[in-house]
Length: 178
Image 1 (cartoon, helix red, strand yellow):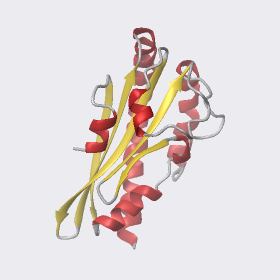
Image 2 (cartoon, one colour):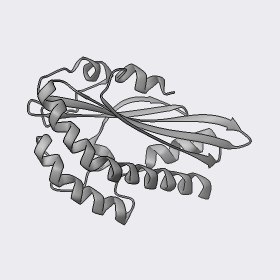
Image 3 (cartoon, rainbow, N blue to C red):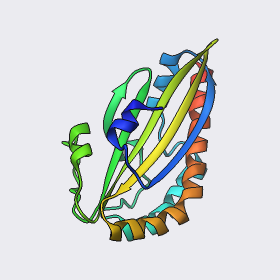
Image 4 (cartoon, one colour):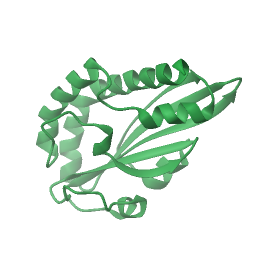
């Protein structure tokens, strides 16, 4: 389990978990995880375009472009084990989150918002095999946001899972090709 994920968002209403096993050294696998992006595949780009439709219902300042890894706040980086990024969304979230660190993220609790943590953690299995887990957790800050997000999650979850599976396959290819 990811210590970073548990420290950033121990309580949540929504989560999704995926994993793969990669052939390679832990440092190289961590580099591949850190270098990944959401726009690596045509399927991910298409799904991200579709994602914007329901996202605009529950989030403020949804970009008209596909999300990239830079849209997530870097929160915890512990090579070669843990990497966690976050997202704050809702009516009272400032567009510029550059000053948000792990402590500010943990403390954030504005009504009408949600916070999301997207974490990766690597487990050295020996014999040059590394298990890569990724989990996304979401916490809505109030009942109204929770109701809206529940509908959004129902619509987006299968496609979000597909994007993450494609991303893990991309990480695997990148780490194993070096």
